[in-house]
Structure formats: structure tokens, C-alpha cells
Image (cartoon, rainbow, N blue to C red; front, side, top):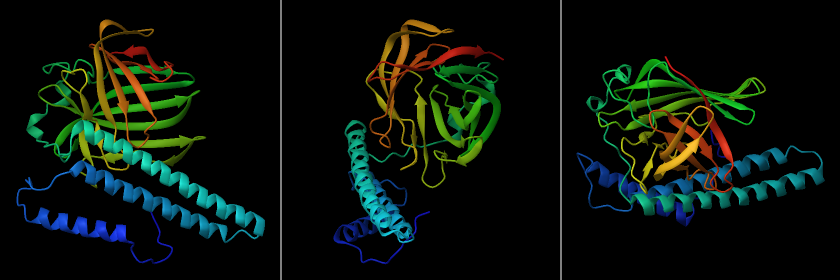
Length: 326
């Protein structure tokens, strides 16, 4: 939670945004059904709002650091502490700018329309029927009782379709358990919520993330749920991926903004227990929250995700080593 350490008059830029958002709210209230064709640049306005929030948080962190510095008795150490607070602010503001640029690049690809997927419960299938009366998504089969085990150096990742369900935003979602262990010690324990629509697309409705360090729970960073605090679901896997298309996999501004781009549907890859020869889906996953972090992922038909590769170095990351069928 941010804390205000002192009351300051809003600067010109802040006043401008106050007027902008108040005006936008007034227009929105006048639109009974939310269909507003008179306003544009929704994506850019979202990027600007996120930039303001990021810079405000950076400034807030600086003032907290300054307050802590005042409780350092050594004058030399106190000066060093204050200098580090200023340096941290500069670095944080630079990073805010990088995120803004990344978001604007997304706007160029996806356009300026609001991201507001219309979710109707009747458009989704019963997760319990996937693999039975419902054909699974070819590249992300959510078959109840199925588990996939991956290795990435000293890490073991086990992804299990539990067979349990959870209703989110009126949609019955499949509960998927994602457990990450490093040398046998749990470092992340996540519950994901997925739902397949009648066209075969798999939607991502959120996750609860438990992050551990030295056996202790340290935070729930990365957690979000569709319909809460503005969070919205995204398509994590298309029914029929088309090369060069980009799509949002999730949307919780400032916390969960993963996107995917289909690079090819004719790739080849091999792991100890799975392979594909010319029919592998290759995607690039990325997020404005970490502009430098990119992942190439290979998906084998009727198996799912089998291999992760660093696009910059070609280094292999997580790879499928075991398939446990129900």
C-alpha cells in the first residue's frame, strides 16, 4: 500500500490528467450501453495512465527510503542512504519509461480499441467433458487428471489438470495446479483457471500465486482474477493459431499483461518424451511489465507445451520430460 509522506500541490501534468479522466468519466456516464465511438486512443490513454501510476509509485518508494534514511545515526551512512534513494528513483523512472514504450508498441500492433472481451457463460464448454464429448484444444488439451512434468536445470515444474472447477465471472473454469520445485524445495505453488470456449479457444481467467523462499511464503505477487479490480481474461491458446497474429493472454494493468505472438505453425522440436516434425506451434510470449524478457515456446499437437527457448541465446529452458495420463 502506498503512503503519502507529505501533501504537495499537483503539478501541471497531474492537473491535465485529472481533467482528462474526469471528462472521460462524464462521457462514459452519458453512454447507457458503453458504446462510445466518439473517443479514440484508448490503448494510448491506458499506457499514459500506467506511466503516471508507475512514476508515482517510484516517487512514493523514494520518500519511504528518505524517511528510513533519517533514522540512520551516522552522517556518512545517512548521506549514502539518501544518494541511493535518488539513484533508485532515477532507475525506476527509466524502467517506467521502458514499460511505456513497450505498451505503446503493443498499441501499434493491436490498435487503439479498448480491451473489453465480451464473456458469455453459455459460450463455454463444461471442463469435465473435455477429452470426452468435447474435443480438446489441440495445443493446450485440458484433459482432467492429466499431468505434464518439465525440467529446467535444477527446477522441476509439474502442471496438473486437477479435475476440479471454479466459477469465475459466471464461467466454469478448469482448475490447473502448477508446482515449481528447486532441488526438491517448493519455490512457487500456483492455481490457474482456464476455460475452453465452444470454438476451441482456451481462455485464461486468472491465478493464485504463492511464492516461497527458504520454505516460507513470501508473497502472492502475480495473482489476479477476472472481474476483480478491472482484471480481464485473455486467450492463452487459439483454437486455430495463425502465424504473425498477436493476442492478449491476460489483462490486469500493472500486474498481469502477458501477450503471445504466433511465429510459426510448421516448426520442429524434440524433448525426452515428445516431439513434432514440421507441425509444431511456435509462439513468442512477452509482457510490457518486463520489456527485455522474451520466451519462445513450442507446442506439439495433442500434447501441449513441450519446450521453452531463449530467443536471444537459443538456450533451452523448461522441457517436457514426463507425461502422466489419467
